[in-house]
Image (cartoon, rainbow, N blue to C red; front, side, top):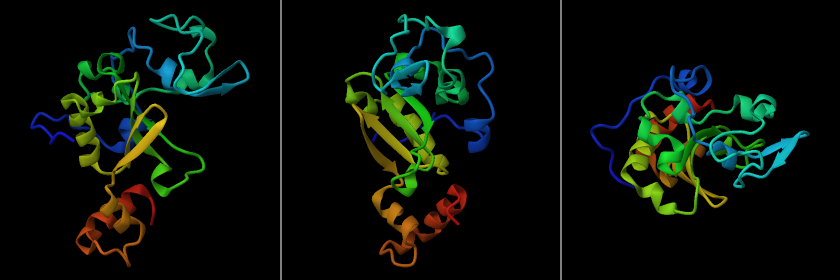
Length: 192
């Protein structure tokens, strides 16, 4: 990962950013990244994640007024976090940052998490300075796990393995110096 830059964006509280607002005046424009990354399993439309929706025109939705509920309520983090600059719009960047969950979680760090999904086939985009800077912002904020994903595979990048061990077993971890951070993560993530 590229070290954080001094001009790294900042953000508000996790609840405020992720659940309660959209950035005023920020619109999707011609970005249709969600038309590819979202899994839709509704009576009116079924589409696996990673495949472009058959109703995507390339610049919008052909069934916008009757689109499924998931399409009406889902927003990427670029729409929610004003500190993510315009050049981080998913279609410009090649990566979509979103809030996700696995229900039921297979591991504790899938309850609710941030994920950076590569839209196309170029996994190297994850190492680009703009993506690395945004990932560093999410990691520095520290209240949610952070994953990266490409071609259906995802990898946990925060917490790192040592901190994860300290979070999961604070009494037995060999990483005792990480206990204060681990306990703070447990508190903020709702594990205690």
